[in-house]
Amino acid sequence: MEGTRKRRGLLTAVVAAVAGLLLLVHHRLPRLPGNPVGLAETFLPWLGLVVPLGLVVAALRRSVLAAVACLVVGAVWMGVFHEPLASSAPGASRAYDLTVVQHNASDENTSPSRVARILLGPDPDLVALQELTPSTLPAFRLVLAATHPHHATVGTVGLWSKYPLTDVARVDLKPAEVPPGWERGLRAVVRGPHGPVATYVAHLPSVRVRATQGYATAWRDESAARLGRALAADRSAAVLVLGDLNGTVDDRGLAPVLSQVRGDRDAFAFSWPASLPLARIDHILGRGDAEVGTTWTLPDTGSDHLPVAARVRL
Image (tube, rainbow, N blue to C red):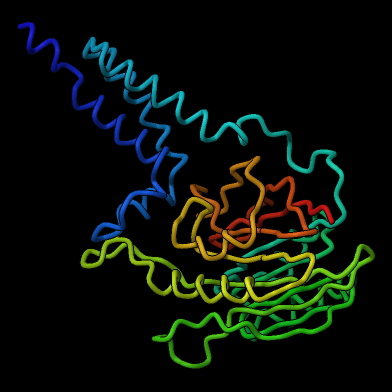
């Protein structure tokens, strides 16, 4: 009987311990077949659900071991995510110089004019778009032109600006195995009142969970490495990266990019999927004289992504 009592809640305690380990050292764990750690990194904040669920089980099983394990993991979770827990409201009155909006508008969206009007809600200085199509591009141009007369597009990505754009160039993000014609990266210099800002718009390949491969990220990771090299070679004083990177800031596959630029950690701002946002895979990142501050999401546009907005201090 004593041995049974000691084992009571052991499985719950083990599950909690694994969640705590992932929270603390996920970036140091090896890449296993099927990439399960990478998948866990995508939804890392949601590991905190282990705590309330585990405490319910601990109460039902009358297990002190399980309860203690869950409380420890709860403390770890709060330590890891203390910044968004203590964050202020979206658009709070921190000093800023630019408002930036980033959105994967979806190549299946049938209301580009409505999308554009939603994106103009926070009065952005820059609007970055992905999944532009020949049929939606004219509508975006028409609606955005009144406030954002300067724009550039490369393939399926585009940038609209209140300020002049110069040095517009294609950024090669295409994985080697992808056929020619895949254009999802651009760089332009925004000539604003606070000085030039080298601005990248990027759309990295999608990731998939497949029965034979597990969490498949090879193309995304290769594209991220290409973007990382471009950023490393850029000597601009102020750099912004706006894009659907198909990964979160905790995802090791984005390390080549995140070693060069960083974003705001003061809010979760989950952007995907729009119907039930679980992860922020759409990003506004900065470096040098471009510091990304408060980040938040905008209303649903009909895309499978929510738009993301941020304040930027130059």
